[in-house]
Length: 321
Length: 281
Image 1 (cartoon, each protein chain N blue to C red):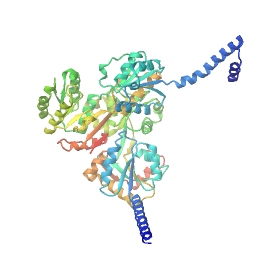
Image 2 (image 1 turned 45 degrees about the horizontal axis):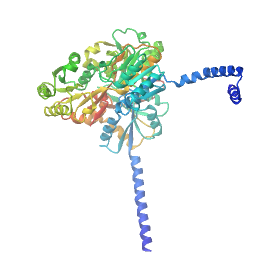
Image 3 (image 1 turned 180 degrees about the horizontal axis):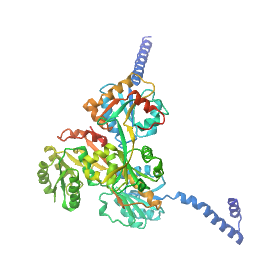
């Protein structure tokens, strides 16, 4: 009926005052009717992805979308200039922003400081500014969780060596020593100041330990030559390497323990859900990842004299044979 | 004339070879038996490792293939469509399937001499009553459906209303679930009793900060079952499985499923498993 009335008015060449009033009222009514439809199309969440062409960011988004059942809007920063991306984030009416990667988090915080921002896929999130609107799931597993897994998989290891720099991991080391004590492991650490120090530090450390735990320290893993030197010396000394990154498997790492991405996605999804329903039972702004992903390189393990707890194989996500 | 003869002769040879190939393929199809696997009690999706490991082990004994499934529906469809397979499945899943298909449970998994397990709801020491878990997060290493079913059993009739208030956080393995409680990512963990015992051995301090609040009934570990129609090869697979625990290579592969051996179910146990309405021991 309304449609017919509007059509009749449009057809007529001139509009009387009455017709103008009626048309105004009709437009107003149409707006009211159409509003819920528009609101429904508006998603509650915008995902700001640092760069979808980076595999880990794309996978993180894919896993999240599989968990999160409501509609989302996606802004891939790699597709836009910073100005355009800022405009799109600002214009978006979603209640919450999910920022994947630090670039996405920093820009979102800059242009939408009063919105809730949930982040993930950020290494060392502590270096970033966290406001009362910031939430997230860290990328790093709790140190105690990793050490507990070392003990579970290899019950006989007694001494674990660590190369670290005071600049980046001084406090981490104090926590790690304490956590290691709780699982009956002695943590023996050597600090490295520069590339020049590294070779002698490894040579000094290896004879005193059962395995080397290679942590993410930018001074220790300064470049390819440094990484190659570490693996060369551990091979010569018959000491297996436990580490955090899959990329080190090709060089001969025996064990890789990292955060489980599907679990992180589940945690982020639950966080977003709570924020969007204003039903906050969130106890911490930034959660630790709750699940670990374990890769065991059996091919390499066979070369070293350390004993695997076979029962623990049921907890390994990937076995390389 | 001779050209025609040559053509006919070539055609006959070609048809002969073709029929031979088709026959061989058909022959392979009948000989190649499959071991189908799905486990809702674990979120460790190590299917590639499992497939490679089991295929290489089974190939030592004959033309057998291992087929892991990551989705319950796909596994169930394969069970219903497949007339002569061997299935590795959780006892919980067996209870669901027994109304749809007449599977014959033959073997039950064994770990450290036991073939049953309890599920424990573990909490931080400061939780004294299940009601304190209302609206809280439970960490678990099984599928959401499996976990909710076990939680329903654990809670019992009086507390079952809490179930819908729980939020689940699915983690890959039991030890993650227990540590999620220790580190505050979850308020409770649903794990096997054995996993809690393992935590006591490897990190006693963390174990001390937790306590078991409620427990499920005893449930069988994984089962090996046959479809209603069996043949020579399915019987052979059962024999191979039964002996896995005594071969070092087989033992390693069993560990990947959280087992160290298999044993034959008694007739009484088989009857009990197939009895409608029974969901545990």
